[in-house]
Length: 325
Image 1 (cartoon, rainbow, N blue to C red):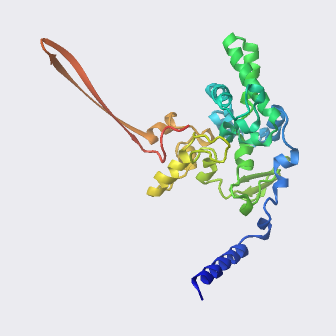
Image 2 (tube, helix red, strand yellow; image 1 turned 135 degrees about the vertical axis):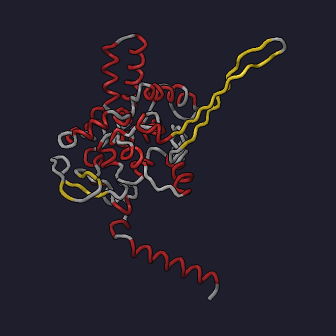
Image 3 (cartoon, rainbow, N blue to C red; image 1 turned 90 degrees about the horizontal axis):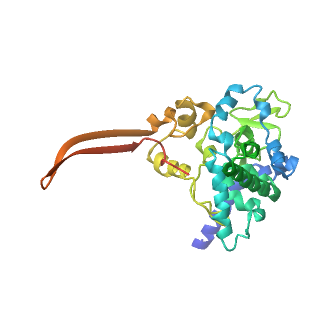
């Protein structure tokens, strides 16, 4: 048998073996999409509709403590942030989209969902489940909020600020929409299901079923947003979050085994608060500072001056680069 024939036989054998190992439902790409929240409800046309689509307020009744922890985290205000995040969205329009010759954006009214996904991919992934009218409303709200801040108009500022804070990474983003990464293998996240660490019934009218997510305790869940690096799938690639890439190539490659959840939730004791290295609960674990000082007199010709030398060393003990984003 010639080398070419041997290679051909091997390839076909491998393909047959692969086919036999995959459930038949996975062979037709897209089966199960119709059960997703967005497919059941249809794409949102307003911010209010998008908020309602992923409304997780029903979770509070049984998970009050977890909700309270989450409310302290930046995930609960991922579009607004400290105000800086929202302002950066406007910067991305003015100093980004409007300056790029082929973006099609001449002003805020030209902004579409695809224009914002460089930021929203992480800060509001569910924006992909909305029509362009939501992108326009979001940018208009940010402009109105910033104008109100500058004018000292607290009435408008509060209204717009609350609207921006209503858009966030909440229970359903992690425990439904983004709970499955390999959808042709594990299926698409379904409406009425919360994904976690086990299968069974879930005492909720809105979400009566609980299913196990293969990634809920794995770093890849966080890696969907806290990234590998350039988002090359976008028409205009961006570079922002690189933590997950650093975690993979420098931490796990050197034998590290702890997950994002173990450090940012369990060991820190912060649970769903999930702060970063700036928080006292993680600062000591993430960074090691050593400071040495020495004093002496320095003679410059006839002048003698007192000097102090300060040596500072900082060691990163985290499983990834610091900072990120």
